[in-house]
Length: 133
Image (tube, rainbow, N blue to C red):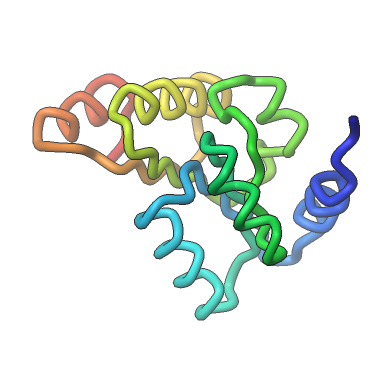
């Protein structure tokens, strides 16, 4: 069925004066970024999370965390990711990081993107393959 919270959140974000940030992964890194954004008050955000339990717990306390796959273009369109100020890919799995970052880069070539690298080789791959600095 239709997720009313998601629909309202997307509409509110699309109208946010300062834009919004998309965070992929509500793990230690993703949570830290959310806390930083909350404390600064500079940007709204939405979070995509793969884990059902994690997403459910976050939504229970009113956080904009959605069980959705950011490697799927239809999800990106539904959540109006193209209107975001930037995307943060903070997935724990290297493979998921690469899938999501590649989808973001091909869908939104000019989108500013911060990607969690897992080691020096990964940094090099992200820079050379996806033009992530």
